[in-house]
Image (cartoon, rainbow, N blue to C red; front, side, top):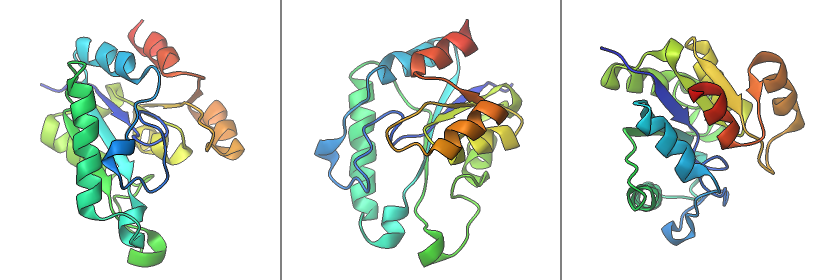
Length: 179
């Protein structure tokens, strides 16, 4: 039996984007993130975070730093009764490690989560603040929602408005998907 998943970007979508976040004490949930995740979890959806972490390849973040930040996010969410079903990350940067299939907008991490958790990709949604965050969901037959952050390029907003959905808040995604 398959279930839909909420594939969600981490930095700029669930937590403040500190750019190459290496200090777990700086993890700060964005407004609405807890209610957003809780609504999908309560509706029976799987919760999967997928994040590009090119700072690892660039030497700005260690794998240990990444794991500490991940543990801090998990702890903050657990304090609100939320458990992520999976967290996937790409540690590569094309200029350093060459091309890979796991760096968003690549679909490898989504496919791995699909296979491990029995995800119904066409019934799933991808949410993020960049086009690359939502493109994999569309490629796998699901829906994509772009939520703008201060770092969202105008071209990403325009493309999402044409090819996916561009909405102002996480609450808007909840209302549109879980009505």
